[in-house]
Length: 324
Length: 252
Image (cartoon, rainbow over all chains, first blue to last red; front, side):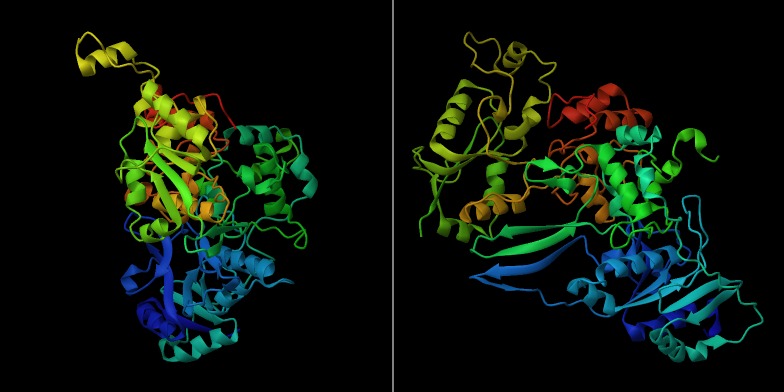
């Protein structure tokens, strides 16, 4: 892993080099003041010291709503992929870990063609971050699952190329780098950025918090919408007036009554059932990702919850056993 | 091709829902080609209220004997009765003060002390009187949901149901959360989505025009608004704007 020093004053020039690899997207802020990943037309739009965006980078891979196909006269057609190559700049390790998890889901045994096409067009450039009170990330400086990574140090960034595309970025930006006396931070080898996997039996614990959360959760779905690894989706078909129609895919949410609903019954009829299911999926994982936690520690679920629910408080069997 | 026979009518309402259909300008040629608008007094004269209809799209709350007559007659003449808009589904703005206003006083305020006042009663949703086969929510409804229904009727079915709250689309659009970030009285968590968070996207709180989402945690919404310093009276007034009679103890 080669490292080079990029002085902070060279950042704008570095962004120009990144544009060679695709449309540049990075953390910025909307007119309403919401942190978001969006196209970066001018370096002044970039908020490199951002904490977290409301919607994680999964939106680039799994849009909130997408058309899977259109049909007419007994034939169907898939929409042509039009997304250009994109360089996603300044992703925090937690969001990189989120993409790594989505890769496991969508590029596994049954590859999702839409996801795979969009993933292939993404170049990921990570950056180290400073956790805030919502974060519970265990590896804010780990360089996993990206093409290149910047580690913030005094007066600049240490650049590391991780993949061949990262090497190509290094080559393109070679004249911007300098050698430095700054000691390289020891790259910690973490298995992930989030919390450790929990025992699946915990979801049936008699912790009284379960009922409290079930009572106070408003099922707004924000925690799941904003989660970098929540990927449940619904597929629906809408006929059109001309006799054809479209099939769409849209984010689904385990907090909604319809999520576990089948003809005549519901696998998870109550909010408590849905919370237990969410706990299982987030912290224990299930087949084929059993034992793999999908929580990456970004803190979004806690930051966006209108009633302040933090499922990690359920990590002990009962409230009396919780560590302070 | 056999045309699908429609009746489109309004009871006590502003006609905004019917207007929404007329505003679907891009789709109207297709609609006219495939549907027979048998009875649509707002848009065309000379219609006959003679069934059978494949579907009747009826807007408005029920608040007069004439409303009831129309509702029963369209129900009896139609295979599918569609409660078209929030008044038809929940009572709507006409019903917001049902809990406190006296009918007789209202009539005298409007009509003065003339000897014979028109007959009317507290505005009520269709479901109080007849069975309803499909509901289009919203004040006014989304064009998309109207077209969706018409297209589904052509295909011999009904559209797939949406059952997520406004917050889901609002967060996904990366709007600023007016409830949490601005401390405003937003009803997003308990209101049915499908509007793509139209109001919050422009910085206006969700007023609840699409009615309750399935299994709304009304008790918790009330609690979190009280915690943020809003008074019970103000909260209820806002909740009642498009649908009176919430169950404030409901947690699912």
